[in-house]
Length: 73
Image 1: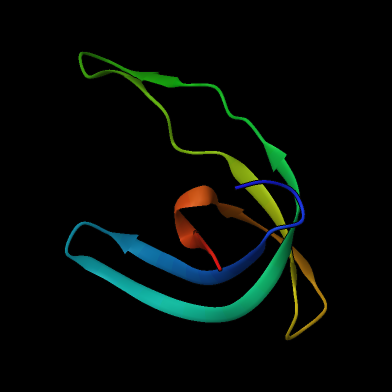
Image 2: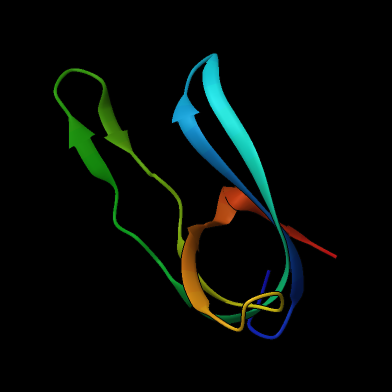
């Protein structure tokens, strides 16, 4: 995944078995921001994924998504 790629966006809301997938259509990646790991008690370091700025083709908005929500077309 790199800047300029066309992606299909499916936003996931919720967690575990209680989540909903919302298809948002296609967009173009404008920027990718690497994130630092967070440390949670005895679990240790966890990476939540990179923040990706995407231009949405349906609405013309720029929104940020976690990289797991995007699929390169």
